[in-house]
Structures are given as structure tokens and as C-alpha cells.
Image (cartoon, rainbow, N blue to C red):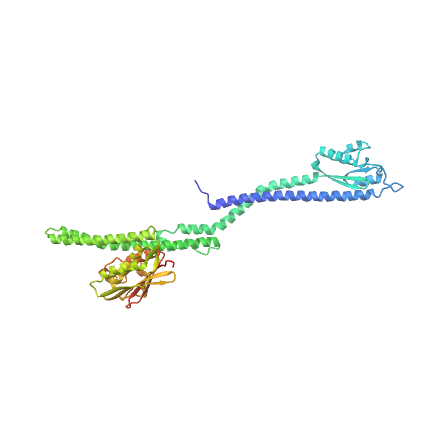
Amino acid sequence: MTERRLGTELVARFSRLALAAVAGYAVLVILVFAALSEVQLRRSLERSADVVESLLGLYADPEGNPTTVAPDMLADQLVGMDQMFAITRTAVSGDTSAVYFLTPDMPAKRLEGLGAAASAQDFRTYLLMAIAERARWRYRVLHRNSGDFDIYVVASRAPILKALAGIALVALGMLPVSVLLSRRAVRRSVAQTLGPLKHAVDSLAGIGPDDLDRRLAAPTGQAEITALADGANRMLDRVERAHLALKAFTADASHELRTPLARIRAQAQWGQDNGRSEEEMREALAGVESDVDGTTKLVEDLLLIARGENRQLDVGKTVFDVAAVVREVTEIGQAMVADRPVALHADLAKGGIEAIGDADRTRHILLNLVTNAVRYTGKGTISIGVSRDGAEVGIEVRDTGPGIAAEHHEKIFDRFYRVDESRSRTLGGAGLGLTIARLLAELQGGRIALESQAGKGSTFTLWLPAAPD
């Protein structure tokens, strides 16, 4: 399915919104005009009724009673008001009514044919029926009772309807123009609004594997786009670090694997030469086996790191006895230094200390730390201690070796990093022990701290979550 561009979608949506707004505004104007016109028509009828009522009070017979027939002067004044009137009078002796005055253009002339016995209600009923026959919605009727008289003022809505029709036609004619102008304005506004976003997208699309050091410009003038650019820059930082780490890892792994493979090749070729004795062949095969074992261990460590970094390594989080793990590691470490001038011992407090984690992974971490301590301590002591600090349990591996300078403290946990390259190769190891130790510690929710100074030994402390009391 072809996806529409954001600018096109926004223009279409805002155009529909503008069309609805303009159409709604036109309808609102028409409704407001109709309502105001109706109010004004009502006021006009009220004023006319007021005038008629006042005129009726001016005309009376010699005895002071209203005349039975409207005088010519009254008729002239009423007709001159350019309004349609119907005036009925109720007889004094009862409810019998008669037409007192009826303008010639009244749309209910047949009221004059009503009998003398017709009541005021009859007049009202017949008047409304007569108007209804001539499209009552075209007329507005006002009824007012004034003593013996009922005054009906009728006005035509024709002028209002004509004005409404004119307004509707003008609105209908202006609607396409308004929509066209609105669409152009919306398109220009959307283009200006999406300009920083388009620039960010173009800049991001131009960043390739060889340009990972490039970053998006920020601020962009729009908070949301700036936030997007900052997020993309942080992502590029991580990608660049991962890319550089991958390049370094690939180079280091290739270098580490090249050496044992070259030795295996050389020993195999040496063993294949004619004239080699059985003892020499055995020596060659033993060398090959040793290098294969070392290479296998290196590959296994690399796979362990890869699985751990991808969170595919099974790590338990259960309560275990720290002292029991430390005693096992101490026994192994003492076997390592059995023929060396190094004393290795554990300082365990009375009473058990429990932590939350994986006992096997913790044993692996401590073996790596102890192995490093044994490797770099020519003579002296190595001690393992356990303590608790609040919600954490610390397992400390302290040695009296050469120590580590401060500038190496952060890098010492990187893959294949060696403080002294030549000495490290002589002592063995691929530089992955501390990397694995830190990774396994973090997977258990813990950490590894380092305290060391050149010439004063080193102390590595594994901190794990303590079991609740």
C-alpha cells in the first residue's frame, strides 16, 4: 500500500477542516441573521400594536364609548402604517365579536363573512386558518387583547426570506473561493512547519556507516523537532559507540585468533616434515592440542559475552550462601598458588551472609578475579573477604601485586584490554576475564568496584543485592 506523505495528509485534513469551518460559519451567519430578523420583526409588530392600541383610545362616540365603526381618519392612519391589521370587538352584552377594522391587503378577508354570533376565539381560529392557507410560515402574527378589542398585526417575512436567500447565494458562491484560498494558505503553512522536520529527515538519511560522527542540528526552532533531533543524536551516539566497539572487537578477535591459528599451522607443518621422530610428533600434537584448547576457551568466552550482552544468558536470582561460594573459590585459588610464594586465604565472618543472585555465575566471577590476582602477584598475599553494607553484600578480592594506574581503571574492563601488553601475553590470558566478570555481575543486578594504585596492589569488590533479613 502506498503511504501518503505527511505534508499531503496534513494539507488534506486541514483543507477539510477549513471547508467545514467556512460552511459552518456561513450556516451560523444565516441562522443568526434569521434569528435577529425574527426578533426585529417581533419588535416591529409590538410597536405597531402599541400604535394601534393608542389610536383606538383616541376615537370614541359622543358618550365616550368606542365607536362601532372605525372612523375614516383612523382607517387612513392604520393603512398609512403600511401594516396589515385585523381588529375585532367583543359586544358588551356577551362574548359575541364582530370585525371592527380589517386592512384591505389582509390575507384573511373572509373574516368579514363571519356571523354576528362568532366569538373572539372563533375570529382567532379563522384568522390563523386563513393565514395558514397562504403559507403561514411566510407571515408573522401578533395578537394582543385591549379591553373589548382584539388586535391582530400581521407582517410578511418575504423581505427577510429574500435577504436570507441572498446571503445563502453569496455564501455558496464564496465557499469555493474561501476553500481555495484556505488550501493555499494551509499548504504554505504546512510546508513552513514541516521544513525543520524535512531537514532533519534529509540529514539523517545522509548519515552512512562512514559518517556516524555527524549529528543533526539542534535546536531547530520547534520544540518537538528539537526533541526528535536530540533523540536521534543520542541514538547516533550509541550506534557510533557500538560501531567503534564492533570494529575494535573484530580487530582484536582477529588478532587474538590469528596467533594460535598461526602456531597450530606452524606446528602441524613442522610435524609433517620427513624424518620427525615419534617423540617430536607427540610434542607437535601436544602443542596443537594446547593451542586448540586456548582457542576454544577464547571462542567460548566471546560467545558468553555475546549472549550476555544480548540478554540471552540464563542467570538465576535466588538466595544463596556467599560464604559457601567463597570457600570453594578459596580452595581452587590455594591450589593455583601451591608452588608459588603467595599466600591466599579467606576472611569470613561468623554467621552466614546471603545474597540474591546466581551462585554459579558468582563463582565464575570470583574465579576470574582470583585468577587475575594470582597471575599478577609474583609474591605476597591474596585475601578474600565478605561484608554487608546496607542492601548490598560485598565480596572483596585484595592482592599485593603491582597495582593499576588510575588512567586504566575504566578501560580495564574492556574486551582484550591489557595494561601491559607484553607482560600479559607472557602470563597468559586473552583480556576477557574482567569483561566477563563485570557482565555477569550486572546481569545479577550487581556491580564491580576497583580500588588500586600503581605499586600498592589492587582490590576488586563484587557487590550483589543482599537477601532480606
